[in-house]
Amino acid sequence: MTHALPGYVCPEDGTRADVRTAPWCCPLCGGPWDLDFAPDPATALEPAAGPHSLWRYAAALPLPGAFSVTLSEGHTPLVPLTERIHAKLDFLMPTLSFKDRGAVMLAELARRLAPERVVADSSGNAGTSVAAYCARAGLSCEVFVPEGTSEKKTEQMRAHKAAVRVVPGGREATARAARAAADEPGVFYASHVFNPYFLHGTKTYVYEIWEALGGRLPEALVVPVGNGTLLLGAALAVEELARRGVRPPALIGVQAEAVAPLAQAFAAGAEDAGAVPQLPTLAEGIAIPAPPRARQILAAVRKSGGTFLTVPDDRLREAQRDLARRGLFVEPTAAACWAAVSPTAPDDPLQGRTAVIPLCGAGAKTGLPPS
Image (cartoon, rainbow, N blue to C red):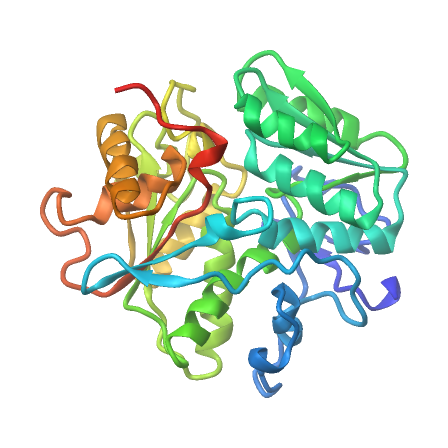
């Protein structure tokens, strides 16, 4: 089956590689891969006729043929928060975060490639997702996490029989440790940043919104951005649906005020983002000081006519509590978009547009931060 897999292509220098033999990054520039894949817009999309999982969008996904890895992920509810803003409840996924959308793709790809072990790095949610889906696929898994990662998340990884490696230092030190392991023979690097199959999983978030809204999209998609895996997946889906005649929305990225390299670069008109200090923030899931796909993220937001917003920790804390008062208990990172565009936000960042925000991770994973 692996002979039919779409290959990798580097967005920076055009290097191409076979997915069966490629290194985890471009061998020339060291950057992340894109995928040489675009679904045929003439192919019918009939998600309602598919299985109750992400694979209901098989016609738009780059893993052809029969699949076996699934936990019935996807198809999460869309609920109103205000007259103009809906929330998509992606914290209701099997491992309680949206990362399941990409992890199921990586696990299915790894199952087909049959490595000796799978390695991942994560500040929490991506690691729990990869651990769960590797367990489902019968794959040996090792997850590198930064010190200070929520004990509830590392406990979840271990429950799925993943080996957890706690790395001193921040998110960048953790990534370096995982990439060193990824260079070893027989290892599949299940990177939610460098492997583009992950992005083709997260794009189903937008396909589900399109389905739920009867074949259209809102005027804006507001997305929390650290490494940009949900935003870039959304950009893929928006482009693919535009080929089918669907009007594209603006993409609005939200970052924590304490760690906002993309928002700063966007405001400066820069094409790339420089690294910023790793400062503490409640939104640990998006506190990425040097996103490897920064150029792509900035270009996608600009192309859509969108923008970046930042939120301080006090507004994150209040947004998390406000959502809980509405019956939606999410982790602080997942409250970032609501903090940015709720009726209590300064001015009207949506400028009257309709929007959908994702609630990406469950509050049970972190609890409430102290007041």
